[in-house]
Image 1 (cartoon, rainbow over the protein chains, first blue to last red):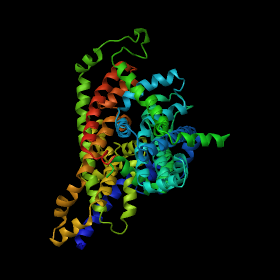
Image 2 (image 1 turned 45 degrees about the vertical axis):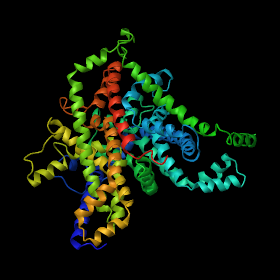
Image 3 (image 1 turned 90 degrees about the vertical axis):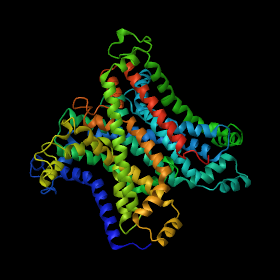
Image 4 (image 1 turned 90 degrees about the horizontal axis):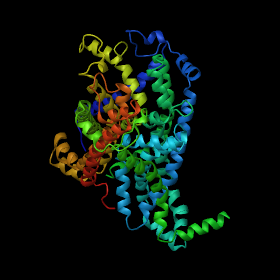
Length: 276
Length: 303
């Protein structure tokens, strides 16, 4: 298609403006995290951290409990991903590949579950977890996370299963494979990429989660980093430089994982959300 | 032994129970952590339940909480703020998402990298996003204040989140930053699905940018726009996180939304019964949206 130079320039300008809008806050946090405190608390705001320092990173890592908080988050995230991958992959496979009565209703059921109000669940979950001795534990938190992540996982994963031609499985069955054999040896290896993407998506969401963690953790033994960092902002009034450093450190895993599987994760999201 | 187990499972896999067996772990989980809590949450809304006043017992109080709701001015303010918050944010995000999707659909050199960067805010934690923006809008050190003052838009540094007129719009801006990539992502995927013959035919007719947008792209995206708008409205209604981080509902009640009010009733005042009633109201609102979604999107088509 032929496009005028003016049109191209205008489009570039728009795209660049949005890229700037999206990236600037993160770059700004990076900038603040590398500055000395005296260069932060000033009205002469400089756009670059000159002179730069790593003091803030060292301070937040050694003088706060951020490492413990991040470890708690990592453990809760790990359990969440394991639970979702195990239960969700089997469920999504069933909903995508098998024909049975009630399939469509189950699918609809999982769709509507995604829209249940979180606050309505949080209150009884608090009571249930307390009775079960799971309040303020990382496994309890992981179970709560599956409440809002498992339905999304199943819908995303179903999209990846749907993309595999049904003939492959039929061929395997004709060759004498049982249904289990066909699933385990033929289909699962083919969705590996999608599985990674969905797992990472679930992992990022669990790592970032704030509300459940705020309600369901009460001590530093299981408190996750978003809750801990917010406490540092509100109650302990930590200096901005150290807080920014903490924020940057805690989004590093997100950035790394996002960079690795971004392409297939985007595809999975598009399929799982609207099935365009 | 493990071999015999595998053979036994393989045997079961050819029975009628197999699909349900595979679904069992998921169904079990969602019944335990979604269905059961939701039902007991609805039950709670008809009970007296104050965690800090357990001497009052947990007996049924009928519709008392619901009647109290009707006389609670904060409930009505929250409802109103929720409407502004959801409509304002969705409208802004959709507009930004549309613009960026159409722009990136040109696929000019360098745009792949741009699209990855633009997607990033969607994956960032709200705790970090909220606090970065709080810092940028800070009344003493905020870079946005400095920029606006430099441009002559404002006279002095402004405490955006301390001004009842500006707190909600400022929060909407922050949420838009976080959420517009969601629209951009899905609309971009939708644009890829529009057959190129349509563009070619329009080009033959000498159609310009506007014609393409109004007569090809917008109609082609209709279903996706419906779906994304409803989904996003649901998630905005549902999550009080950003407002909890930025303002806690203040100043005054200017950023108090329904989900936040319910959460605070439970988290701060331990009034689980009343919080339950507030959540049930949300439940009804959300289920209306969800009905709209199922009815008007093609989420279940071809299944």
